[in-house]
Length: 627
Image (cartoon, rainbow, N blue to C red; front, side, top):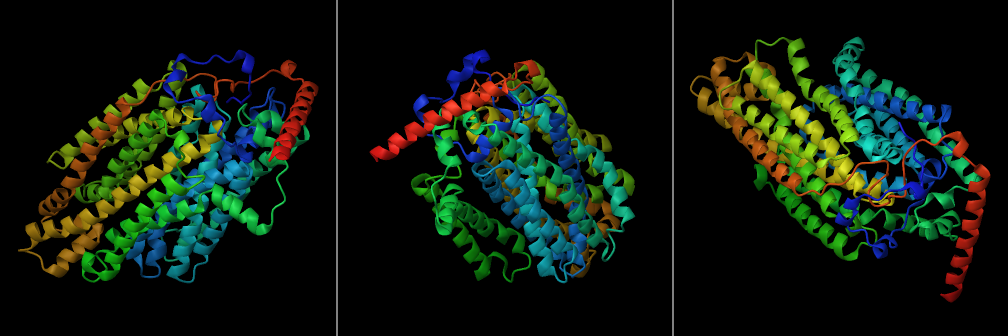
């Protein structure tokens, strides 16, 4: 794809720019992070002499593709191992709690990683994530007890989140709006391949045995560092090259250039002053408040069945109260006191807010049913072979990744996103409607499969369009943070829905089993049916077992259908804009295209850099003298 270069003379501001709040006074308030400046020095400097046309560009894209493949392979295999890792220590019941907590950690880590990438650099953030990922996997692979498994899972969740986020940021850095959707979707294609490869790997290493899961985690503690190292080294080399050629001062946008030299020549700070400086800029207190608040609010739903007295347990009550207080404190802190908030007001334009609403509701509706959907299908389709059941469970992943590329190509050639986004949301409603038929009696194979395919198609189109719209509505300096905010709220939406789903499932399924089978089965037998989908699949009379599970699932499916309609309403409120060669719709002078060698004049660029740095130094010295 295209490396990025800025070409102010050829910029053509689209007529839709007036739809966003882009006043010059507001622009000048931005402080472009050094990480953004460094990546622009590589790929947004006129002309592109660090990563131009040739082997360096090919190597950069190959390394990003390698990250995408290995990351997808690890996700496609290790997600299966958690149940066996916890079961090895007799603690399978904590799987739900781990899922909610790690989901919250992943959400909170999004803005942290984004700010790290902006303040320092993309390769620094990627290297930090790589260390966490590797250490976490080693901890799980060598775990002597369940505590180490949980701790390792927490550590590698942070690493996984960082790798995925930096990969997405890099792709967005070096592609134009017109290609953004297609290239971002292409990085998910390995999930399609690995959906069929993962089973062979799992079987080959005996990962589902008592200790085979250790090899499953351990192999990626080696594969992932080896795969990511080329990208880290290439980006660090590129940054060093750009600094030598004097590109950093040219790389920043016009309203941020005054900050660049100060970042290149920072004032002398003590270790404590440095820690405070970066703590304030990543909004460390805000991240802690939102993380602990959602943990307190959502964890009780997963602990209710094991806590004595359920929600009447004093510990659960305390968690809920503390969670609510911390959430209120987070809101007050963010909007009243934080100097560098997680969600700065300047990025909260109408399009971006609508994108947050769309994806939050999309993930909320999806996770209401996804946690237990495959288990429900396994029970209601006892005649399906293991192979066919596995193919069915992979339908959603394959569909989401495959249709996303199709959606990205449509964005490329239509240069518009809103009509496609609305079409995707409509397809999602249609798919949820067909799925709702299944819990109302029509459980044919056609209904189950078609609902998954249509939901996947609608979801792929929706997510791809939303990503491009949200990234295009903010300047490059805020792009990584905007991506993180969007992901933060989508993951929180999924975590909230998962907690609700667990609460409903754990309450409703036993109730309906007792209603339909209570006269013929003892409480112990009903507990076994509820506790194992394998037992439930073989239990008789099976038509009553199916009816119990389906009736319990009915409310969650209805909720998913209603929420998907609300997402469509949010989609209708977004504002349209042109998807062209510009990096975003705010800074139309940043054009993303390949430059020929005859357009490259390194000596001219070097002179421009020296002149600009001299001018900046004079201005900064004058300002300091007047203070």
